[in-house]
Length: 106
Image (cartoon, rainbow, N blue to C red; front, side, top):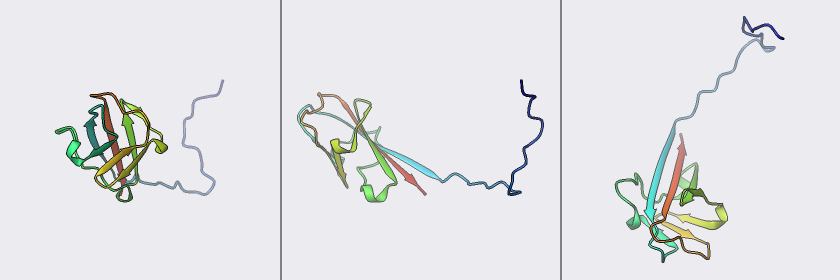
């Protein structure tokens, strides 16, 4: 059994490098499927849950798309400013939650 650590271990280089976390902004677009469409626009946003429109992917660090709370692989969708296009054959059932999570690292 090792004795408890009672002092800070020495670091070979003589100093500890600290990196402060970046400021992060997380925004979300919410919509409900109508059971017919594979295209969703800013007009389909579910208010007051959405706190953003569909942003241009070039303006964010990364984004995630969830359908019925399941993270979607990138080949299942395309996001453009103001438009989400699902590339699947099946249309989400009527009332299914569609969420785009946008993350901006500053």
